[in-house]
Length: 252
Image (cartoon, rainbow, N blue to C red; front, side):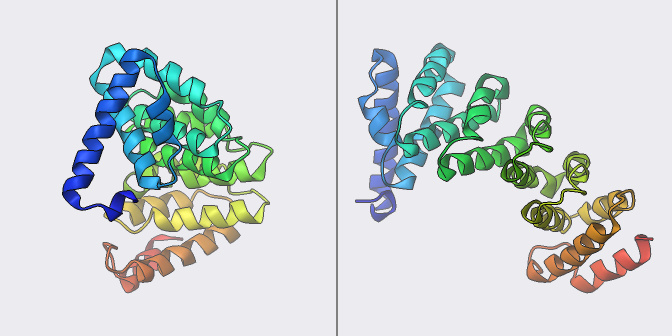
């Protein structure tokens, strides 16, 4: 039975059980239960396991080296679900201690399975939101990587930080303005739209776009911003009409 097929009370008990079993195996050096949970077919069982690992790491310094060693070992497993869960666990740790888990993202970004690569981007999003300085510095190294998909994934990965603090990621986005790959270009336009509809963000984005040299891309980005203010009208701080008026007045 899948996690969310269980009644709420049973889900709570299952989470407690998984936490206890993970702590027990960290104490004994065993990996049987850990591997079982990390490879479970149910996404939410795997999520419960990697969230537990993150909490245990932050709450118990005695387990920290054991957890990193464990994740290093599990990252060599053939089952992509295990490697994916390792990356997600590293993402939980990286919210506070990025340097310790940086190597998982260095490797995971080039994993043979798309689920592992997607876990890297998801982790960059959640880490970058709360621990931006080291995460964005790491991401910057890949903005001009020869593999176009790496550039696209990094562009997408830094988006979440930009939704509240566009000024933090705009310098990185600007470096991609002349990228000739359609997928990277489209992702860049998309991300600019996504970081411009919350309070104070449109003003910051428009002011920065004035300094960009690729005017064709800027025009497409402005159109995307206007469209986002309609698509996300229930969440945007301005109406679409107000966004249009602001852009017409301030983008010159």
